[in-house]
Picture: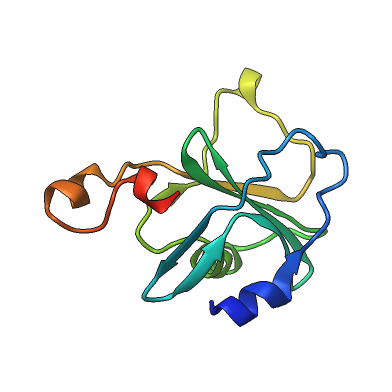
Length: 128
């Protein structure tokens, strides 16, 4: 997405109930596909929260209806840099937390170390 599109979807206020909990430092990244940043966004009836947790990108989508594969895929590529791998994680039942019926999380799962060794891309620290 372009910088102009990013600004169209961003929400300036902190999400209710999360004030003081989130790391609100702005992290930005650019690649050949667009511009990305941490923050809260509203897009097609979804609230999308992008954060950096433990040095890795995290995308949270909350909506009032279930999302399908293609909707989640579109949001992933629109709001997260292309050069990372993300996954939806299902922990053991005892560790599962669901605070919203239709909430989806994508977590960055792989370092860019292989790309760095091959002379491509950069480390996570260089993106921050």
